[in-house]
Image 1 (cartoon, rainbow, N blue to C red):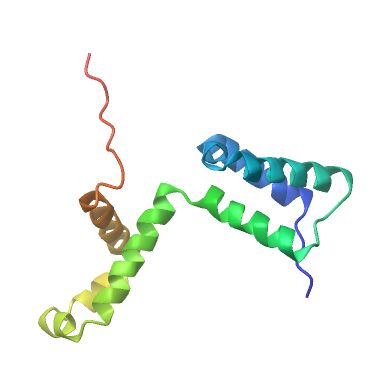
Image 2: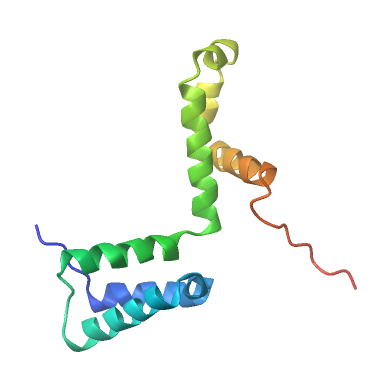
Length: 127
């Protein structure tokens, strides 16, 4: 099956990148490639070249990588590590139930990123 990228998909990525500031994270070469691909899909049609599709999907992953996704990924990483730890499961049998809850996985990721100081918590200005 041939994978393609349409103009609607490129436009959706462009809007998301513009709104969440991911365009600034892309280097000028990747940003130029993205703009050229957006213009190409607008004028010519869908992109079908596999190397170009892989380059654009790599940029799409960077654009879609929000803080919520980073938290979720870290929580899932910690949950998998806990499931493979037999001693932990033996001491705390409720861990299996907790890991099935989405809110607990999200909390695990939040706690893990906060310990690593991967972000800065913003406090509202008191005035």
